[in-house]
Length: 199
Length: 199
Image 1 (cartoon, rainbow over the protein chains, first blue to last red):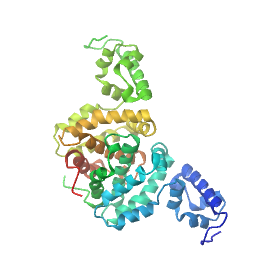
Image 2 (cartoon, chains in turn orange, yellow):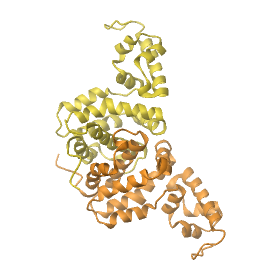
Image 3 (cartoon, rainbow over the protein chains, first blue to last red):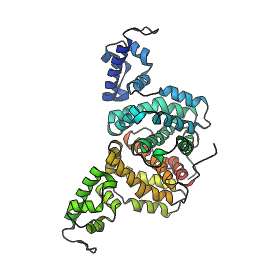
Image 4 (tube, chains in turn orange, cyan):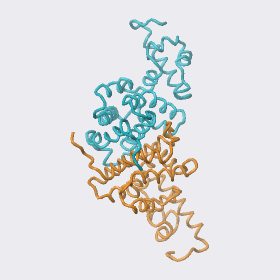
């Protein structure tokens, strides 16, 4: 069950069964309450097979939510070019992913769920904190990385709500370049500038 | 029916009937689809009486949503001291209203509704644009007041989602002063600084 090389004939069915179990677990007990071991048990497979297919819990969550990208790779790519212009790059990447997904797909579903459902909110919370934002904030080596990560989340979630849900104009139809220039400096400040200034 | 001075014995019942009709109208046809005339007709009163009790459509909406403040007065108060430190004052006022309302009451209900219901989104959209944000952005006399208003909305809606809905820590438990210092400069920039910077 722990074979790492190549795919076997039964792989796609096994993979699908794991995803069914994972969606059920993430939906009912949230991200924090979900374990690789529990999902494996529900799917009737060895935990090592879950790791084989999906890496870690974040990878499993991404696959279960059908996110069209791997968040850890996105963060790595964003940081690869250093912190210069990082805010604009975060906005451009975020908009490229959301604008490029018809109807904003599972991301909008996750956001809608999180606003009305406590378990989904828990999933979004853990996902944002561990997979995306904390690494981004910590990369700059500044104080209070968790608060910085929260501030970035507040601006990006608000951007998603205003652009894709409430659709306030002119922001909803604004060009990504325009928004990157307007919002980038905000994220740069949250990530990499003193958060207190003299009263 | 158009008497402006004093309250008559039947006023509180009439006022309540108007609010019932208004909530039904705002809930079913949204802010844009609601008219003073239509609400008056549904409540069986003269339109002048709706104006007498609630002023204009925004006043009626505020009363129907049971908002614990008059948005036009809030904006006027914020602008009374000029644009110096305006961003911090916006954040402090926003948090004082939200933190001071147990469970965040109708504001959180409106936000939740807007994220999942198109009519409620329409209501929130019109309410934000006309009653709160456009006046705030226009007060500074800068270019692109609507986009500036949208940007302010994106940060404040995101703040509400992260603090009161998803409850990301440490932001959810952060002191208002701390958040005002962190977020204030963002709003000042959206309201009152060049939105493009050299590429």
